[in-house]
Image (cartoon, rainbow, N blue to C red; front, top):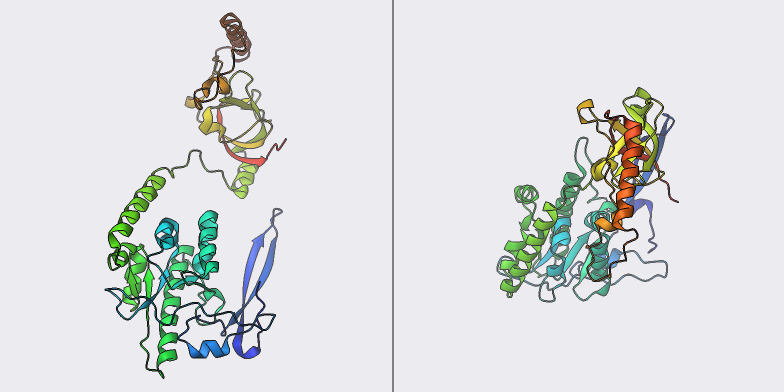
Length: 388
């Protein structure tokens, strides 16, 4: 990490208090201090003040400025421009951004970089390689640590809205900063263009006087627009396909506080999960409140539990109580055709042995249930994993 010098004149300290509730119900106060600086450079070679005031690292060297003094122009921005993409552009259009014919002189905001890392580590690593290569002049601007561009989250504001506001604030600062930097020189100031596909963010940017564009409209102004537009269409189709599959395969687990509250109130129950030896899609949980073990049926109700997990379950309504299945369901047999290239193993038992096993299952389960439905539940959380 680069070590920067700091003085009282170029930094400002802000403090925030966070109250955290422990597992025993006690509240503890955590105070966080953040030092905001005024010497983080814009990295534009047009900006003489930043070149003279940029701090040196621990070795006394100033990092070379990245952004070109003559950035590329297109039909929409004939005087040249620097690009400020938001997170979604990097999430869904990374192939286009990496294309050699477009997207030069890009300002990657720290807010966007952090959000991308949280959402997709592979894309974050690809973007990091772009910023370190220097071929396309990508510059990481630490807007969250610059006094003029730091944006504090407002009460009731979502994280996404705060991040969008931080992007717009950085665009406004860059524009004002570069205008002041080139005012004494006979040089045209490049435009700061925010690229986003968020309609609400674009509308707010236009209302604030920020030059902005959707990625499709921006690409239309480039020379090889046909090729890039085809890439955008392919990326949009892939994103749409992913969003259609985003539906959760399993129900989301309850929070720890919700599970513990439910167990104490008696609306939820806790016990060890056991898988049926005859059917891998069936399990049971023994809890003190019921004489019989609670029955867990199906992938959705098992909800990613494995043998020996300490699980929290919710009792289903009585009209959904069922008897244990007398079918033998073996996972290997059920999924043997998932990989047709692998030779199938020989059958472990003959058909006669299987029929005898089915008869034994019916006898065992029939004696325990006596034809009555068994209390049935679903797993809503796992309090302790059986890592062995």
